[in-house]
Structure formats: C-alpha cells, structure tokens
Length: 278
Length: 278
Image (tube, rainbow over all chains, first blue to last red):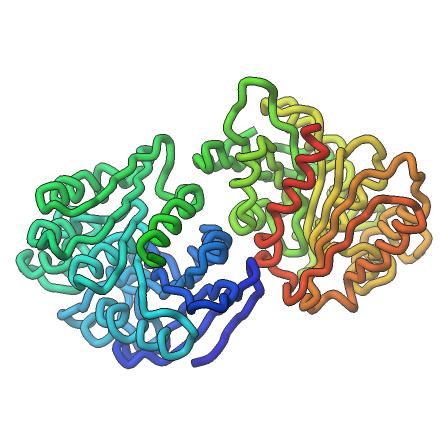
C-alpha cells in the first residue's frame, strides 16, 4: 500500500492510497476519509461508488461529505469505478471500459481478465480497509448513477452485509436501459438471462422480506437521464411488492450533477448513521 | 452575457456566465451562487478570489460554501484569476500570466493591455453583478493565497466598500516574497517602490483606524508555502500597530489545499454574515 496524498480535513484525514489488487490484476487507487478519532469506538464505514467517467476523486472533492462524516464519526471509502492500466482492456466510449466497470464480474473477452469490480468491492477492498485502518466492521453503501446501481446490487446480493443502502439517481434496471444493455452485452455476453443477476429490479423482485434493509434514493426531476436510463420508480414498485422499505424522494429542479449530490449528501449520511451507529 | 451552465444547488442556483470585459479587453467567465430567494430583501454578495492556477470553478466545486451561503442568504461571486484568451499575453510558468493575474493593474509590456484585474474587480464586475442579478449592494470579500492577497488589497485600498474581509493562507507581503517579486517585476517593472501600493503589509501600515473593517485570516501550520511565501504574522503585526481588528487563526495540521478551505469556509461565511446582514 502506497500513500499518495494526505490532507487534514474537518479535524480528520483525507487520504489517497494505491494498492495491488489480486482480484483485478492491476494497481488500484482509492480515497478514504478518516473522521477525528473518538475514545469509545472506531468508526463504521460508508462505501461510496461513483458514476460513469469518475475516479475515486470526484466524490471526495465535490460532494462535501467529510463535514458530516466527521461530525457523525463515519469513515468514507471511495474506490475507483473500474480497473485501469496499460494492460487493462478499454474502449474509447465513456460508457464502456475504464471508468465504466458497472460493478460486476465480466465473463467475456477481453474484459474477463480484469473487470471483476463486484468481487473487488465485496471481498478484497473491505479486507484491505479493515486490515489497514482503525475502522469498525459495520458498514453501509451508497453511490451515484452507475454507482447507485453498484450500491443497490451489492446490498441486494449480500443480505446481512450492509446496515443500509442509498443512492443518487441510480441505474436501477440496467438490463432494460441503453447504458446497461451496452455494458452487459460487452461484459456478460448476448444472453439477457445472464444479465438478471446484475439488475437491481430483478434482484429486488426475487428478494426475501427478512433480508430487507433501509433504502433511500434521491432523484432530481430535471435529470436529463431520468426517463431513458434511470426510472427509479420501477425499483420503487418492485420494492413495494417485495415489502422492502425503500424511500424514493423526487427533488424538484435538480439534475444529474454533483451539485445535486452535494445538496443532499447530509441527509444520506444521517440516514446511514441511524443504521450504522445504533 | 451568456449563461454557460446552471444547476440547482441547496435550493438556490449555481450558474456560470461569460461576458465581454471592457476593462480586460477579453471575454471573462465567472461563477455565481444565488441563494434561495427570500421575501424580505435581496442577498448581499461575497466576492471570492482564488489562488494561482485556479479558474472560477475551483472554489465553486471544492469548497462546499453553497450550503451555508444558502442558509444565511448570501450570494457568492467567483471570478477568474486573470484575463485569458489567444490575444492575451501569457507565460509558461504557473505563477505568471494566465491564472496568475495577482489582482493588480499591470503597467509593463506585454501585460498592460489586458492585466487589469484590480479595475475589473473594483468597478466592472460589481456593476455587471448588480445590474444582472437581484442582489443587494452590500458586499464583502474573501480569497485564498494569491486571492487572499487580492481580497486584502481591495479592502485596504477601498475604505467603505466592503463590510468585512477574510482570507485563507494569503500572500500578505508580496513585495518581499518570491511569488510576489516575480509577478510585480513583470507586471509593474523593476522599481520596488512602485510595488508598495499592491502590498497589503505596506497598505496596512499606512491605513487609518477609522477605515478599519473586521478581518479574519486562517492559516494552516502544515502549509508548505508558509515560511517562504505567506508569513501572515507580518500582516498581523502591522494590523496591531495600525489598530486594525485582524484575527489570525493558526490551524494545526492543515495545508494549503481546498481541504483546508472546505474545513473552515463555514466560519468565514458566518463571520461575513455578521457584518453583511446587520
């Protein structure tokens, strides 16, 4: 593990680390915010998954989350959005390859060798974080757009793992929308049945009520991707039928940007704190 | 005036505008945050001046100031740090030319044709802002590093103009430090006597007590530029002798970055609100 950057921030520390990922077969960078230490107990962790084109730095610099995380005593872990490097397959489009890992395990060439973000986030990164920092094992997960898809996916596929899950403008039904279909065809092959295990709506419909965790989604109604790519109401209806406690808030006038995330991240952190710290 | 971007943010609007500056003889871009409208009165304005290499976007995206500005009802105006464009003189160094206007009026070739950021900020930009937006005439000013120099300079040279002034890690004594000496030699010529009207320490020593306004400076003690370029204690001593109410806070562990600014911007906004809103 190599420390790339470290800054004092809200009484805690904002750091950037590089490590060699055995899951992804490449070097990976992540950011972490460690809140001011408290005597009583180490902080629980909120994992944040970013959207298309992002790295570990977008949320760290633009969302303003550290202030409330410092107040509440929550560590923030911000991974990259895909494997990267000269040896890693890529595509010139912004929505495939680097910056567009879609938080799944690819099965198709040339992607399968490195694109295993699901295993990385489920197994390797938490092991690295828990072994390297003074944090509590209790965790929650959140994300934006493609990262909202990732957060919901990880929560739905791993009952008991996360105390709570939230998302900003998530891709909830990737098997049915252009961004998801393009990525799934490349990473998973042409058979749509194989896409369903990575589709939050499909996973929600198959979920068991006893596995449900508190879920918060914020969606701006001035988001240009809302109708074609996002459609969070489809997930909300699936959650209703599955007796899964999902709160969907439509925020008037807000778009798909980090200005939207910054405006409501405090609500999400306080929501997660209710479940992480109880 | 051309609206380049607009985003809903904390119930207000974050916008980016381009206009043709007659003072600078080039097109200029600025950002503005307009807080949620209130029935009683339009918001006063806080001008923010950024540091070397920055544009109007650094503070807008990284400082997290909009949250408190929305709460307090203060508009934020964030200009660029220099004139720019194909016709504008530049230098390959980061600390001269584009991104390094030093908020003065240049007298030397090739700079004098465009580098008049002082006049732009004192006269033209406030006229544009007051004519184009529903804001109150009352204003305050703040900035970081080179922008802290600019904020102090504008406040010291224009008694009665600003309700209050603050700075993060400002260059207070440019006539005596390498960044300032390099820029002043290029923009103002070799005679150091001509530099003094742009040096906050010299201006402070010549100030009148009846012109004093509340002044807040935050400085991190882990700032790598502290000893060679910044030295805020020199200004604090000049203020003490001039009976000028300057509060200098040394923040342990903080560096020169926007992580430092984000950590204390709320204090600065509440400080300015005391003077802007009374």
